[in-house]
Amino acid sequence: MKKLIALFAVSAVASTSAIAGVALSGAASVSYDDNGAGASATTYDADISIVGTNGATTLTVGMDVDAGASITGVDMATKIGPVTIAADMFDEVSIVTSAAQTSTGESKVETTDSSVTVSLDAPIGDATVALDDSGDVTISGTWSGVTVSQTMGDTDITKGSASIAGMDVSITNEAGATDWSVGTTVSGIALTLNSDNDMTATFGLSGNTMVVSHVGKVASKAATTKVWEVAEVKAYSTVAITRDLTSGASLTATYKSSDDSLTLKAAVTF
View: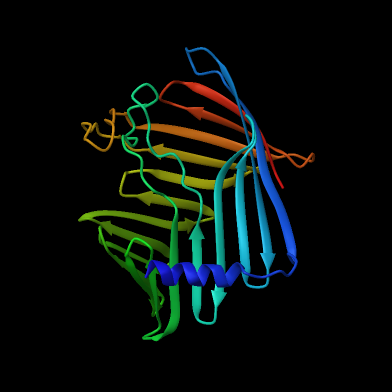
């Protein structure tokens, strides 16, 4: 099967024609955080995305450029008749050392993140069948407005989403654990709620956008042979107000209740 996938990939890119178009986009920001009673800090972030397109084939390259240029993602997608090929070519570093881990459940082991997925969009009861190079099979489709996908492999994953009575509902079950989220809009206020007891409310306020969030408590978990421990984090709330400036940038002020901190962030996207 891997040889067949490789053959498809080679046939997709074995062309001497010129690239039809290249699109460049990105985002940059600078943030000042007073950190409440702690020492203040200034942080920076800058990212660039390059998308090359030739017919039905695209190559997307992501880069982090705020502290030297480094690749963050390389993805190719193409079609051969009813077959869609998606290749994730970037294998990021998964392992986190003991000195660098932050008690948030990071990985202790290195894993392979690159992959190739072949999808067949054929009249199989309005379903799409996909096979990746690890042997996982995913069947997905939309029936009567309900989107469902089932992945069968090392870990079975079932996902479902639908719009019901003005609410956007999504459910994911992975290895017996279920996560869900609900989103709706009431009187112009966009509301979200999920299974981790996280809630957000987004609304306009005198030309600004205000987002009020509640982040649910994170329970502690012991370390395993594969992941570091997770430290308990108490529930907290944030209030963020964003204003679009005439310069093309945006300015966001965020208050966080857990450390009584205020963060000011100037950002731009293009």
